[in-house]
Image 1: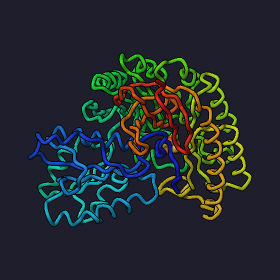
Image 2 (image 1 turned 90 degrees about the vertical axis):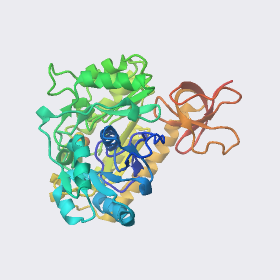
Image 3 (image 1 turned 135 degrees about the vertical axis):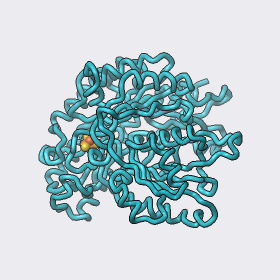
Image 4 (image 1 turned 30 degrees about the vertical axis):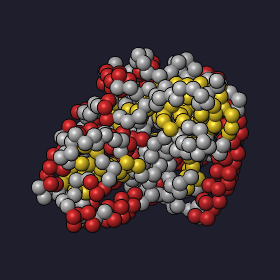
Length: 478
Ligand code: SF4
């Protein structure tokens, strides 16, 4: 696992971006041979992946097509995440390696996302080869910003919008590639956990109105999307401030009823806001997949209090018991930070005990490191680096064993798998391997002996025959 400090959605309980990925593709179909091209490189969580698609979408409306080839790009944007360690350095390093392109043609370099929001004009002042900086709230301005930059006016557009007038950009369904889609339903966070930068770089919570969410899900399904993941730093707060104060369970029920939606997921939930009603929906809504990411962060009540998490371990564990009572097979994942300021050996032992009791399917664990501007950054970072590393290694070794034993339950079972496409090792064993995911979010590579090869987005029953370290292997029964 990464050496980093966690934040909800900074980790990846699924398929998105722990490392750099390019944005989703609007296919460059050759019809637009003369169209300008944009390349977006994404660092960070699914929210950033979603924002990258919105950038591609707004530039698409301005005539751009997407490319993943820097040599072909007229505009290169690095969409960044400042909850990660030294992201600015990483991004600027990547951009400087692309600098020779500027000698060949007038390519524009932009930085977007949390780093852009955090540094704004200062970043432009410091980096002479950067042409524009754009914050997450200003994506609608991107075509203007690019036009200005193309005429030599370097621009920083990184201002917060007033939450009362925040305007979500509706998602064009055709920007999606593949059978699964992410959809932001709430932006920002009001929790101010003491270690986390999100409220400073993503602003206050603003919920997307239900009508807009339902329209977007409907058009995604019409465009062939089978699975939608509703996104937010804390989806459980969805609805606050909207007319009639609807709740997240209300929204889940409504989205679940969209005709043709095969699977529904959501991420991330704050344990203090995970209501009984929400947890009871698992096992009740037929297309709500049995997977819940519930960041615990620590098993020590003292550390949780200093983190500002608003729950004790007992309260957290009660949430785990509730969801398992509603849906015994649910897969659970979590985030843990080790070496938080003041974390004693006894505190760490409490975390080990807590993880042992919770029996997570998956854990994302990180060494604490201070983030500028947060409350914890002003406290002494007093757990020595070697001790943090030792605690992290012990925790991960224990979780590896738990994951392995949790996976055994699938052996011999027939699981519903949503097909995503050919597996990476497609024809390694001679037979065509297909990749998909179980409802519990495990990757399955499987074969279809003698049968029709299923298309991406289809649901197929797969018998699980082998358990590997990070995925399951199976076969479609004849
Ligand atoms: S401040 Fe918000 S985003 Fe950050 S860890 Fe806390 S709940 Fe998650």
